[in-house]
Length: 461
Image (cartoon, helix red, strand yellow):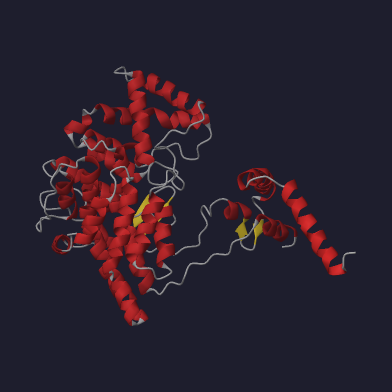
């Protein structure tokens, strides 16, 4: 006869075995059963309570990626839906009038934009040149970073390599070293600035080394020329230093892409990680991996692929009617028209207009088949998208033309385009890290809610 304890022991084993035998589904299979109910719950929340206010926020903001939610301080730029981006109050046309160019050039250069983003002031040509010289002096990569990049497989995505290289530069972080020694909070911004300047200075050499290793392994990298500006050296390192028009285009492209408010994924990521007091190298490496996402930094590649596919299909007979037919074909297949629409803008992107004006100023671009196709698409696409009725902004954004110009000048390696974007976006993301430390901004920590918790708050405000 079993004792009470022995009976309980045997009963537990039996129940355990029964449970195990009854439930043989894998983790994946179990999740496949659970997901549909959660999807339906979210769909119902959107449909029935999207405009319901919980606290001070609509439900659609909570479940919709926080789009449009005013909840972040960003000093360098503000994006207006109708006017476009303003850098410390200056529009892109304003910047083109007042920001200094490189010696012998006419376009804005990143150094003058960097000065504006950091200080809110327009630099003199002498100040811009001095900054160019400082960046050139600091532009060489440490040997250990060169070895790291050279050791990576050519098949590793260039953006992965860029993020790894930037993170590795943290080895020499002024901020990290000073923090470990116990610096005062009032000194945070000075060491952050030192790291930011050093990182911006080294990005061209890092980005160009990745380009050489992946696409042109037999090429020799040019040395840093202490007399050139940041992009002058970058173009040299890429092997395009003799192409003045491409160098000027890269100057304009990198300056204009330098900042676009703080809510975009890469800028926000840099800010979020930086709020933990991670140094600028770690913060910006995280931002680069956000930039690598298809919904953020890959757009100009998608535009170029789409334009080339249209060019192949319609051939040399490029007419408004043919383009219109191809646009409708794209839309009816369930795809979006790449390069059109924007999460915030409701008018043509001023950056697109600036790049179009650059194209019109260069005879070789005016006659370029791919640029002609971009121009004709711009003449047709907005009306088609308005008729389609599913696009809030039927106008082009900067990606509608940016990659196509690179392609015309022979920089045809699509995967590398986001690396150039990454060199550019450092201007805004890193300057904001300086101001975040100068203003002693706190750790970013929003409140999250589950769908069940959200439904309870809706029922019992």
